[in-house]
Length: 295
Image (tube, rainbow, N blue to C red):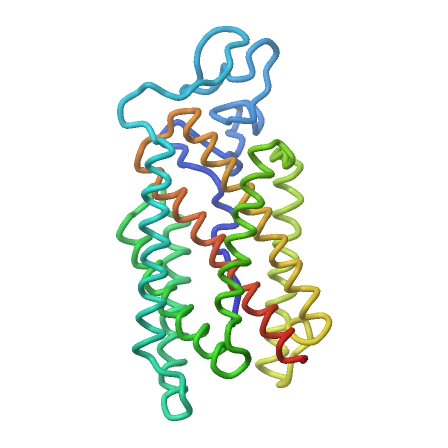
């Protein structure tokens, strides 16, 4: 099993459409990061003056865009439901059609790993594209579902029956909890929060990559980051990081709607949310597998 979110560097909407999120960069000879087309720009008297989608007028608060074709919350919900629905459907189909008994485990696992690798490549391609591609995003979702279905079936069959339902419930609980905390203002997403999350995520991924290399070339559990007590600790850290990325996703969606990002960007929001939820689910599944294998 593995965890990955290949769009660590792509947490905002496209600059070509007049809106930029955390990934905005300063231009040569231009203003510093956070002052041009950025929802975090803070200027004396009018913090939104530099954003082309902001309402004009000194001190005027941001309001929902009235421009036809702008992204709405309904667009985000619909695209996210479509993307996640594709993951769920293909996961269920792969669970049913790719058996994980002793006779077929090798074949099914090979198909799952292949699907997961292609899904990762598609996710990376989308993360570097200037505009979201619905076909690319849905293809990623379908292949990721194949990977999740086989892995989930194997864990349920050989480690503990019922852990998949627990992982799903845990993922839903984290999503709901972060959403409530974000809407209540208990989580403040700013550049300091973003920098901390990105640094922690980079360190986490590097450690997991080193552990994987030791596992492949040294055998056993590598450095032990994914088994035993250390595995439990890193599983919890992985879930917390996923929760932090959910907060970043919610902020991106909120700012995209506020500043009138184009409707097509709802696919990018759905893509980011799906990646994060898959990350959280995989960390829950891994953590539960470790806990049950230690019983």
